[in-house]
Amino acid sequence: MYQNHYNDENYVHTVQPGMVYISFPTENGLIYTKEELENLYKVCKECSLPLYIDGARLGYGLMADGNNMDISDIAHNCDVFYIGGTKEGALFGEAVVITNENLQKNFRYCIKQRGGMLAKGRLLGVQFDVLFENQLYFNISKHAVNMAMKIKRAFMNKGYKFLYDSNTNQQFPIISKDVSSKLSKKYSFCFWEKVDENNSAVRFCTSWATKESDVEQLVKDIESL
Image (cartoon, rainbow, N blue to C red; front, side, top):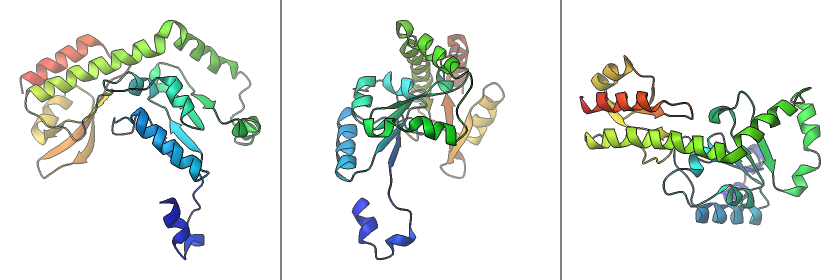
């Protein structure tokens, strides 16, 4: 795609490639393998394009079944990534990690220019001190993934198919309008994509705060469909 841009005689009329942006996990609950990320970063460096990783749900990706990376692998295979806070129990804020030294020097000027310089910014850091103490960040992420897997197995056992085979905290079962209507009376989930006239993929999303008792009741209701 990088070469396609410059090989197009009209390339000056389109946005110049400046960065590669990915999410881990993706909006569809999928994750990159270590090998995929290494290969992607290799291409980015060959093309002189920084690689940025959106880590809003980073903990849930790292604790997903089948993941073969830890947070150090993420750090070694990108230029910038951020550690999600608001989706992982923090009151506000995310932790930006700049691993490329060439991008570190003037970052605080960027913060100031964009109106992001907080007078009490240290309070953001306090949250992450707590989250990374005694593996709390990873433990609560694993809890969310475990809850999502219970929901996934319940739908699978009833023969439902999924739009994506996600092992993270997001699950996308394909259900009928009737089933959606029944479950929505007790549970909060969102429409994701229409599959056909009668069926749609919906998203069930668990978190650090998901109660196991609520999931167990949902499983019972799925079993009774």
